[in-house]
Amino acid sequence: MGTMNRIYLIGFMGCGKSAVGRRLSFLLKMPYYDMDKEIVRQMGMTIPEIFERFGEEYFRNLETEFLQNLQQDHCIISTGGGVTMRKVNQRLMRQTGLVLFLDAPFKEIWRRIHKDPNRPIVRRSTREEIEALHKSRYRDYKRTAHITIRTEHRTLRQITQYAAFQVKRLKTNDWNA
Image 1 (cartoon, rainbow, N blue to C red):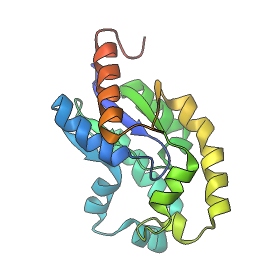
Image 2: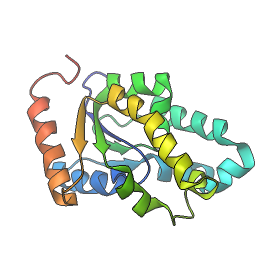
Image 3: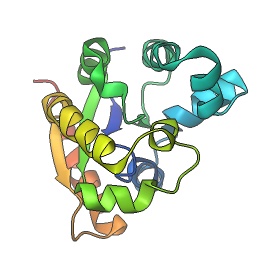
């Protein structure tokens, strides 16, 4: 791979990874991949359908394969909320790019996700369970990220500009030094 030119957006469901990814792509003139959408396209099934038919473990394997097989070097990737749970994914992302964690407060996340039919985990869990999941994953997000971006009290535009600023600032050094 060599040049480590990928930018990964990580964080919990509903923290804004896709929205920021799309805008960042425009701002930095880099192609953008939404990992969930790519998997849906490859499988010809929605994520709830994949979960239902094959189970969560199978879906997690698809995510890891996506990271391993992506040929594109110079791009922005928004990851699924659970990608960071696996050590192998943490390593793959840190080794091949700059990892940005979009850190949104849970109340904000809940407001965005609780009615979304496309999120299998939300469909079968209570608010308390999802909050516990958020807490348990938080450590992995922090550990995996090169940079944490707090999203609270920031507009999408401010978040994107801050992310772009960090990318440009770090581009001059090797991201993984």
